[in-house]
Image (cartoon, rainbow, N blue to C red; front, side, top):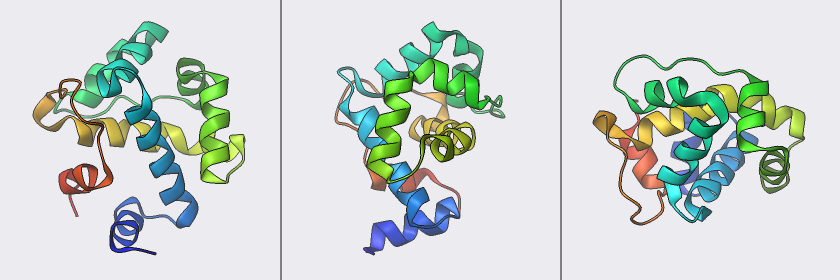
Length: 131
């Protein structure tokens, strides 16, 4: 396990499957044509606008259910995350409600969504985390 993987594991409080899921989510966000703004637009269009605003904002995050995040991302995306992370779809779905808002919150420091620049990376996520 490399330094960033080890640090990610400590920050996320999970084992290698949690790190693998985190990496898969970051790849999914970075692989979208419009990156982070694109995934936020998708979630908003799926009815999670209030949730997304809270995750991007500086206040508390509004919780999301497994069903809401699965429906918003789509079954294919959850399946792909599961395959990439080496987990079952059910295990991924159970972790997304806690992990996804935290990632979005951290990638949008001070409530600002970065423009469509370079894809977010693990270091940018970890740099924003409070240890």
